[in-house]
Amino acid sequence: MIQLPGLIDPHVHLRDPGQTDKEDFYTGTSAALAGGYTTVVDMPNNVEPVMTEVVLAKKKLIAQEKTACDIGFYFGSLGDNLEEFPKIRQSVLGLKLYLNFTTGGFIIDEPALQRIFSAWNEVTSGSKPILLHAEEDVMEAVIKAIGNTRQPTHICHVSSKDELSQIIKAKEDGLPITCGVCPHHLFLTEADVPRLGGFGLMKPSLKAKNDQEYLWNNMRYVDVIESDHAPHTYEEKQYAAPPFGVPGLETTLPLMLTAVEDKRITLDEVIAKCHDNPKKILHLADQKDTYIEVDPIEYEIRNELLFTKCKWSPFNGMKVRGKVVKTVIRGRTVFEHGVVKAGPGSGEVI
Ligand code: DOR
Ligand code: ZN
Image 1 (cartoon, rainbow, N blue to C red):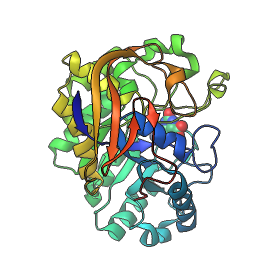
Image 2 (image 1 turned 120 degrees about the vertical axis):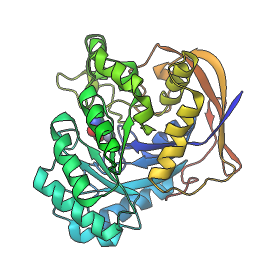
Image 3 (image 1 turned 90 degrees about the horizontal axis):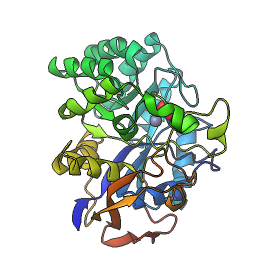
């Protein structure tokens, strides 16, 4: 049995409130516990986007009643809510901005990006990160904004050689930039899309083999492995134009431990990218007496055994090594041998 710290997923979409047919705070955090996560951080692109103090407070109240693990939140902005920043800065872990089209369509342009960066940096004195959905075409503008403000910035779900090479250069230039990669970009490529159909569609999209190899070969520059857990229903994923996103809370750790077995990454690197670095980037407090136990056996990922409400995974049928058998938060066993023991509301809202 391997013992690891309770993992931190800094990038999930639990769909609550507004789209609880896809997921809710209890099913999503149950999936987290089953996947070895004891803290998750939820994105603001709800149906009613989290862009005011009132909407944020409402969301946190709902989470309080339902969460089974610890949960934090990000705020959102289109550049027209800067007066909200001083009111919410203590109540969120960071600010999330979208520079490319994705679920919700909360996209901003470059002038808005510069304005938001300055306002957030001033209000928080650089103490809380801005997280970006920023793909290849906008990376130059992003690097300019970081250079102008020195605002700590995390680039989410880096998927291509073009993106990561620009981030590496920015790191070497001393900019306060970190980045995350998702397991689906490490274990799937565009060649899997014909087989997966809608279940292989997400933003950023699956890339070419050489992009994937570049990510693996430059893992030392990747700060975080983030799931981008983005559940949509099985039915929606079969539409002609399915919504973007795949669930990932229950498959990320087993996939990464399989990569450890295959000597593509070390166990220490997995701990750094799934615990130490997200903790540092988001300035999270210690969770005392919190750990997980993993059995290094081989098993098959199966849709019907998942706790996520959407009950599917793009990795269905894949053999992986490393099964979470026990999750403990603050001395309390919250998941054991396939059973979630934590009730709704037993986790902490950060
Ligand atoms: O595939 C994605 N799904 N990418 C995103 O950026 C958003 C997410 C969602 O909310 O479904
Ligand atoms: Zn996301």
